Amino acid sequence: PDPFRLGDGLTNKISYTLSENAVVFVKVYDANETLVKSLTQADNKAVANQVSWDGKDSNGTLVADGTYAYKINATDTSGKKAVEAIGT
Image (cartoon, rainbow, N blue to C red; front, side, top):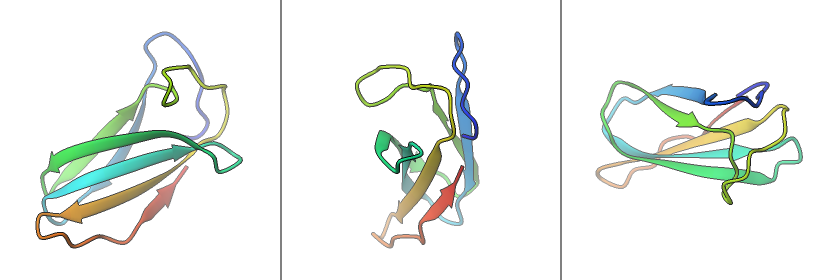
């Protein structure tokens, strides 16, 4: 999400496409590369998918406006891990 702006009901959507069914882990980081929130999506199908981030950290507190990066990791049903994807 780049940049993230706070507001009632706003969410940022992070989109990704899978070539196989997988469990997906999305981690959101601030500009200092500090982990802000971990999002897990189980049982994703091999199609276009997305996860929503509500702008809250792992404690449920809204984060400040700014630029945040995310890393996406996926593990398929046989345990094979995909190459990590990074975005802002």
